[in-house]
Image 1: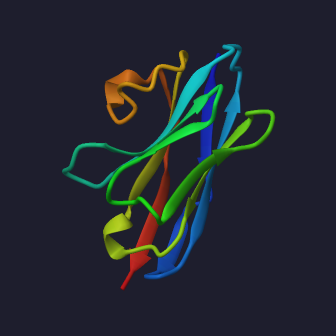
Image 2: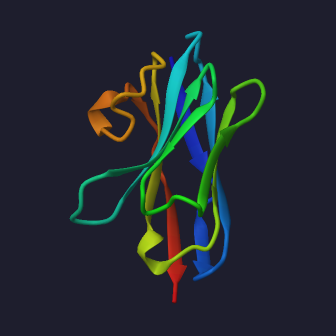
Length: 126
């Protein structure tokens, strides 16, 4: 069974950095799409970034381009989200998600993904 466990959230001042990690276990598919989403109370969950394997093609929401970087380790067991130049509007619960095929057409759609983690909170103060 696929399990995703996020870590690395916390509180930081505006302009600071955080690196989120998503530990992936139980994954037996040869290709996949991994995504990071975020959600604040009362709002829909939004796609932040995604990475496709094979190929490591990446996708980003306009709001985070140039500030966030998605990556994964060589064995694919951990997916990262490096967040720099953080802003108060980046405050949210961040979730890791996985799709069992490498089709990235719907990378920012929540229903495109098969598996989800429990989330890690990021709070950015001004």
